[in-house]
Amino acid sequence: MKFDLKIMTRKELEKLGADVEKALEKLRKKDLKKVRAEMEKLAAAHGVSLEDVVGGQAPAKKAPKAKSAPKYANPDDKSQTWTGKGRQPVWYKSAIEAGKSPESMAI
Image (cartoon, rainbow, N blue to C red; front, side, top):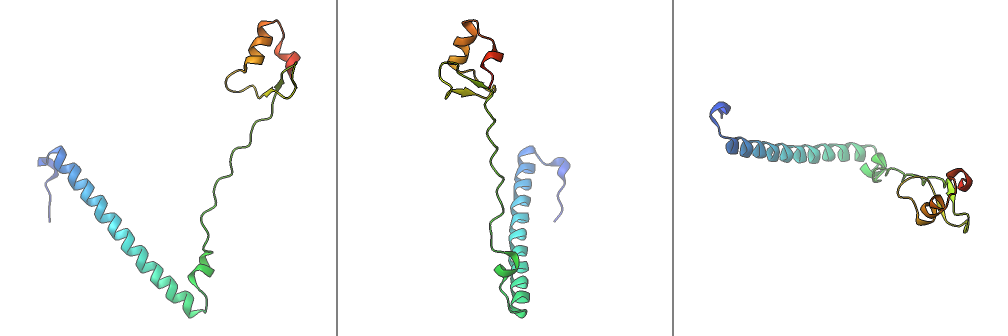
């Protein structure tokens, strides 16, 4: 089957591309099944299961980002802190407007 891509419309080319993607995905799945069957047969010949060989575990997830350490504390309530990133808390804005310096609130 031969296609003359130069005379095809955009719509025809997009459909052809989608059809190619579907066909490639089908072949990939077929190849995966074949490889899995071969691996299971090889593992069984050695007296183990495929899960024993590959671990049967889900891929490791990335660790969540660690929270930033607080840099500033509310002078009136030390339990209220701010890392210095993101929106400024109301207590911080109020203290700045009242004449306090950021250094005086630093932890």
